Length: 96
Picture (tube, rainbow, N blue to C red):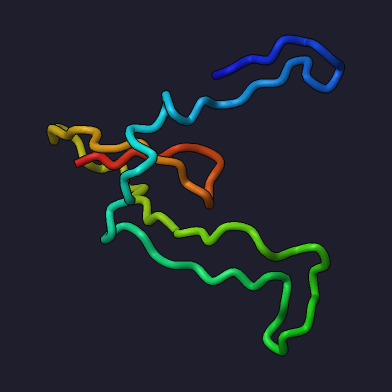
């Protein structure tokens, strides 16, 4: 975490995550079997009309499939990668 010095009222108590130190590699691609493409609507409905204003654009995102079943006990595993997940507010790890 990088904490900002209070040079102004808006900077006070501000902090960001330093991605280069946190992630294993920013150049590596996510595991293909665990990634799905997602379609963004851009604020339009099935007729193509704008229903949500000021929505659209941005980078294309890929949905990461996460196994939330925590029943795997007494199985040795290794953390392969730690990567950013655009659909969630945190990082996810690939454990094999």
